[in-house]
Image 1 (cartoon, rainbow over the protein chains, first blue to last red):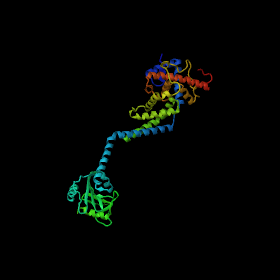
Image 2 (cartoon, rainbow over the protein chains, first blue to last red):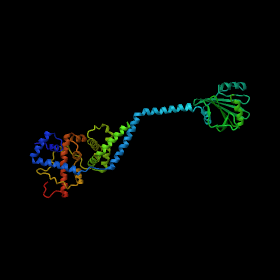
Image 3 (cartoon, each protein chain N blue to C red):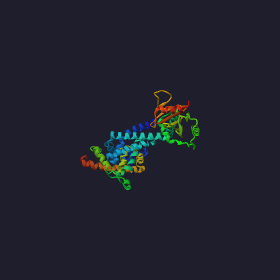
Length: 247
Length: 187
């Protein structure tokens, strides 16, 4: 007597040769087992022949599309995961190089708009408690230090001096007064080119333009940019500029 | 790295396209709903792609059908219709495929249409049906079916026997009802 499950296993090719021999002999000898065997074979045959494979190009295409999107996501994740430090390093290097280029190549250029915006960084320098022109002049000369400008008490008096630093540049603003009123002289270090000003039509060493809405003249001297700005005509400004410029 | 990944995807796509009809057919026979079958088949393929680097390279179809069956058991089974539960007691009772003393007539089911066979298969309880589909339609071995359904090989054997017996009975009922049974044929 055999286990009837062995007949299924035989039909399914799951028996080793010895067991297969025993089962086949038993099946041949017993009509009931023979019928069982044929019924199993027939059931399998019906299933194989009648159950068609399912074709669906649309479904496969949708599936493939999902795989491709997933693959793309995985690749990006792997790339970022693997090279995150490298990407950060590259960005940092770009920032550092940009800063260096800006500092070395762009530092010599100054725009009048920048100068006006530097005013907020300036602090007034305490003045001596005196009205004597000579003492005031000495104080002013000492305060401006090595900045390339003349202070000519015969042309205008120093009213106040403010100094400060902006973007690594030293800035001095000297307010002068003459008979026509006040003018400001700005001295900015680390500037060899003035942008946005044009040469005076009459020629000469000064550039002209407007700074903070006021008529201005400007020139450069030994790595400094100097601006003279006041609410007056250019000719009058030129007289002060000539008196201020170091010869 | 990117090229290697792309070629792995292309290799997977090639193999998956080849077995996709089997995957979709099995999904359809398990869920008995076209919409759910397409979802299940696609999800199985995507899961297989995610785990492709862990594929041992032996039988791709068996591996992907294992993923599909597991996915169906864990996620989709609760929503499917039809007979599902088979008790352990039922599972272990041997039911002969052939009626006692009669020999099956090979022409008995000749007239049956594919749709009728599919309907009869759908009436087989789910655990038995799964074993029958994987063995008789997809040609998986007992061990592969055991791996796919997370049961011992002995259980696969008994489920197959029981599933075939139920299917045979359903097919006979169909054949009788539709008049495919030959005149004078005994049950």
